[in-house]
Length: 216
Image 1 (cartoon, helix red, strand yellow):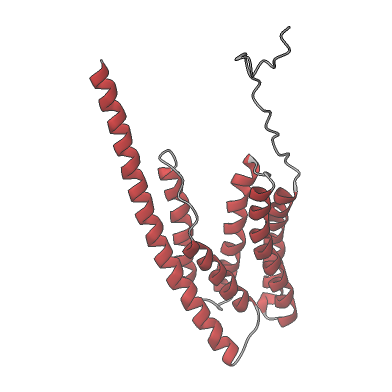
Image 2 (image 1 turned 30 degrees about the vertical axis):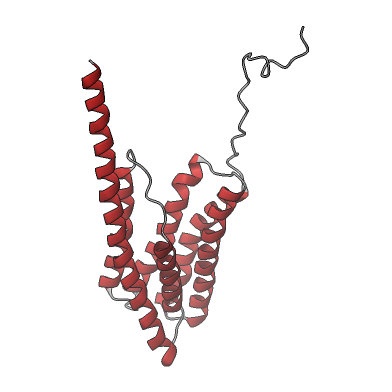
């Protein structure tokens, strides 16, 4: 024995062991809570055909909790290395489930025009499919505009869940108008990013193939 560690002597090095976060961590629990809140929110909002202001306050509380947990679960997962395969799949599903349920229920109750629900849901579904379309070329990062859009949507939908009258009812219409505008603008920006990302990926693939053909 030389007394010199194997790594210093040029010997084999042991790869550091990376601990995989377990399923039952705080980030995933918050995501599960948000999924459970979806049917609870629907039942509260649709109680008595959505005519009881008290029950709609309860529905708003459930929606608010869901929106708050949406902010914290992703932050906790990244900050404390709690990212799991379950979280990657369940988190976006929970996000779109609570928002989609709220929009559809509000339109069914006649509180929100169906075209607003259609525009927002079409954008969200379209961007999700587009992410899968370009996933082999790279990941489209969440933009600041997208985060502002999410905040505007959550605020507007939350105001529509409550029974508001007078100036507040007019104000929530403008908040929803801003949310729809941001939904469209950020959606178009994601389309642009996806096209650029895919073109760059295809160019890299062609370059690699050209190098391989030249090496033969």
